[in-house]
Length: 478
Image (cartoon, rainbow, N blue to C red):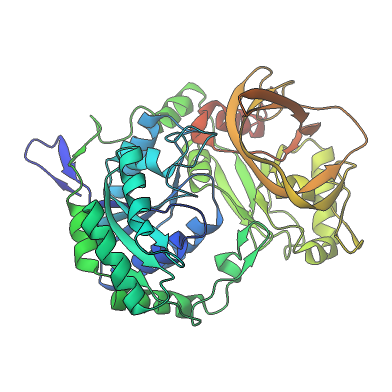
């Protein structure tokens, strides 16, 4: 980031990678582009639009810099811009991978929670990745429509799945002739680069075999078939960035310092579950906990026999407990340690996969049953479709270690499992819009200082929730 003489506007080269629809090749191209620029010695700062954990982990593995989620439905515009600036200012280039189609986000609003919304907010040029199999001049119509619909700065196009090089050239001529948008390259069909998938997306980066080899192959693919110089020029042509007045994220990140001053005490030690089974955490959630003074101690529910020593709280995020149920259920000593500490009042927050883990068992589709922690008496089971998929708002029905009764926060859900429970002692209410109608349901469970639920929350959406958690871990009863 280069400052001008007045130190008010700065140069932040930046790009957003979008597409007409999911499955167009955004992730492959984004990963390859990051790898190619990193290979050239650039410091690349990755970002991801929307609620996603798997793609950011790949970004981080490629760039060596933590990928940050930008969500224009869960977060305010001011927070997003300050967060973007905070992480982009030390990088040579910022690359933002989009989500779904360019204008897909919250309901039918084309700019809320969408790639286009983030691109507009950041004033960032968009590179469209689009598949053109079985298309010719219609590809130009698609690009024209996406460019004009929301007045997004579509600066370039990358062609994916052309049937031949001649097909690529024909599509390229049509797009450039009828839209004025440059085609900067293409992704040839190749069987050498494959990322495996499972029911919630790609297999995690930590599980991917030969990840470094795949990254190298992606960098080669992009270098050989995409005009990197043209893309870099587009990123550098982004409007100068209006820097925050103090340059220290005073409006929001400074809130953590304010809260620490308001509630001074030695920060709690919070254990955080982290391994193949549990790795779905927003980086910012962990950073905000640390900003509030918490000391984070990472451990593995699959391998460690007991929790870390002298902890004041436990955080179990989402992940794939259903995939690693055998390994988790075999670690009897750790599950016993968690139950005993829960009975003694240890604050425990578990979401989605972590919530599944705190129930009595998991039954897979073959009918095999694996015992889990057993703080709650429910049975986690897999279904064939997504449950409560998408954005929602949550309201506390009673006080828990996260919610004060009546407090609200925006969240999201993305899971194919259900917890079959024998009670209706719910802690929170979920609410979402479905075809202009408001749908409400109750969810969440509580036991002493333990709280579990399926929805994922992003602490930047409401810092009070992080504060509630930290205060509970410090011994304050809500």
